[in-house]
Figure 1: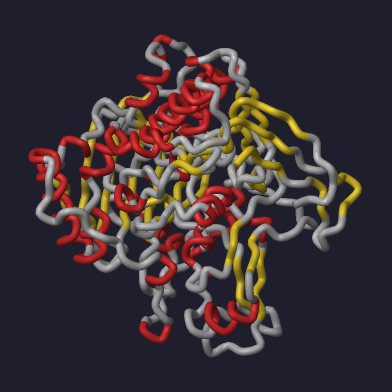
Figure 2: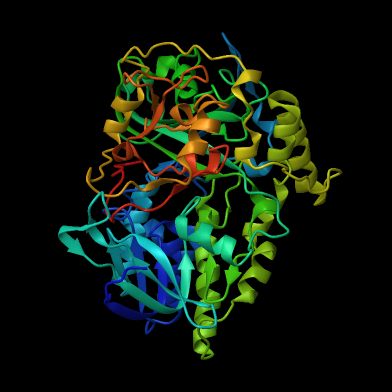
Length: 559
């Protein structure tokens, strides 16, 4: 805690994160009781700056939150899905799976291809019109508790702290924002959510949360290669059968195509680079034609929760709740989470509004935790609960086949012969020593279709002050050398999609090799795009991601 006295502000409800969950909660609170004072804190420089998603959006949540949205002239849902393709990729060819094999929930007709950042900007306008206060550029860095141990608010980080911890000329202390209830919608692996899950044992009795890393580029393609409304998913090459993941190709309006690649973070080989696998994917004969004569205009990356039904932590704690991706509500086979984020924000708001109307404050909203599994969120997640563990156990082809069968059985009969499968290890524990694996020789980028990480990060518009404290905290640097480098061959240099981490020798040469000695760990924190992969995948859980100064990080446009 800061030793400086901080200004405090009191609200009925404090919401952390201006994503779909946080904004939906804010809007719903004001719909239920316009007199409630509601504040939303957002660490990005603007609403939507840190939002990254595919995104094909199921409008079920938006339809309930704002029933008349289709009549609005400025809504962002411009491109309805018109075609839905599923491909299996081999090294040289592809097979399209017939749509009738797919369970109904995998059908994207009725959904929209959209920039989720722009959806959040639009939702923020609705929230502000209802009287919600939104503070972008303010990173919540600390949870505040009362004497009974209940959450009573959050504090934002101090600004203007120098690298050595001293106060610079532009120093400004953080603020305390106090509320009757605090709603956490920070997204995947949020720093406050992580603290609250640990403090209150919210994951006790649940399966470990599982994650993927999603990488995305936005391209302006030639008109003849543009097919508005086409949604294309693939799995297989370039990933081996033992590594889960797949791709998406979404054709938006204005000759724009969003292309992305997801790698499940339970992979074993420390030499694997999700970024390089993504670049290889674009060279496949079934894919590369889309990008002939095209221009890449955006890049970003973020982690995705993949544990689903069996990994969702307890969602209520004394004084607040978890929502959206902080709660792990992504449907993995659908590659969708924003619909459940909106629904969870609305559900949280309804329980909060009822509690406040009853004169309650800072207690536990147990009814919210008890309710969600019986809602559309629970039904969505329960149907697909075995897809991820089957994929992880049996590999891509057999695992996906069994997962498809399981989804059909759950859809038709509401039950599965598998019951509810367990996930087992954490993603960090899944990584194996380098000695068990061969190095992967990735091709050099051509600068036309494939690129390096630094030129990619440039397109994310990310920025951090060079003289501020590093926000990627290594707990034990000696352990990092002894294990992450000497045993695992420096996987941080490969799993990070932004080139934040380097192992270098005394001459400054790259040295992510167990044979290298006299090495040091370099952290280029300025490059960070806030994906949280390091916090998830470090084999020793020795890297802790904490928020930098408010307003820093990527500034995604149309992503």
